[in-house]
Length: 398
Image 1 (tube, rainbow, N blue to C red):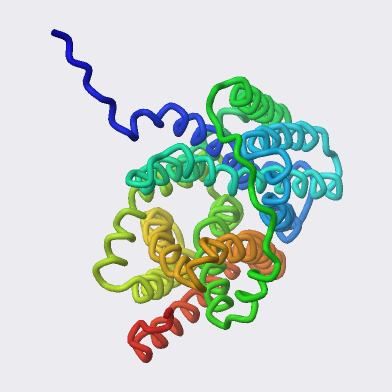
Image 2 (image 1 turned 180 degrees about the vertical axis):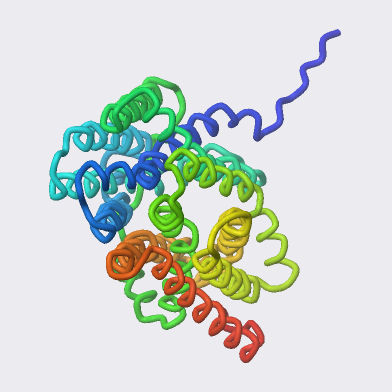
């Protein structure tokens, strides 16, 4: 007699989850691919470090406005169509960017790239919530969150692959074609949520904007995002210009540093549960700031490689504890609104304004000096938070 073995609930959702993670991987890679391309673009277009850093400011500005308005879009066209729209917009933006010949048009194209990218995230999370059973939601989210970590690794490797065979402009156009193909394939598939999103609740948002702890978290997340995405964005210029490293070697080192940190968020979550989430956030930010400053102070050689690899190992440990603390802000009925409001602001500051600041300092002094200054900001932010945590015995969050 044949006995049918019931499938595990997570395995039933796995194909849709992997499809979604693949789209998120392409989405994220399209935003960070410009980091390893910066030395090439600077040389070709004759632009300054501050102008290069502004690339990420324009991406972050577009991302900021897009994430905040994504609920209004998905409320009209549903989550699946919003994800498709995001992929099509991203692909089109990369095609436009491949033809930009002036700094102004490049910045406008990057703004459009951010606008397209930001549409995905809220609808992607909502789709996972509808796809994966509640009991397995954390594991579903963990699979989805592999995408940005892999994107950090893939971007410099893709950059080297493109530059080995193609001009950088044709390379990003090819990436754009891949993203459009992925979006169309998702549209034709049976996967995706046809539920509609919710438009932003302005009255609920005002509650958080009046909350001092919300702004503390915005500052801490901004510093944490700078320690990961901001430093990553400017690291190729730091390695090539300040240390005379070849672009290929710099990109390989950048990819290596992110391979080592892929599994570290699991350790960050475990430490947060065991030793206190706010305490772990503060210590991680403090140590990351020290490593960022030291990375900029060493002359080079083995110590530079060790610090470039070690810095993101600690930096990524901030986020599991940080999201857990942020999700406790406000009343239960507000759900994850604190995360939805905090993250766009933090990305704008930590992923946009701070790389531009590093670039400006690089024009005046050096990229290394910019790393020392933002590293010091992280030390001050982490140290202040640690002091406040001990003074309040971790009772900052009700």
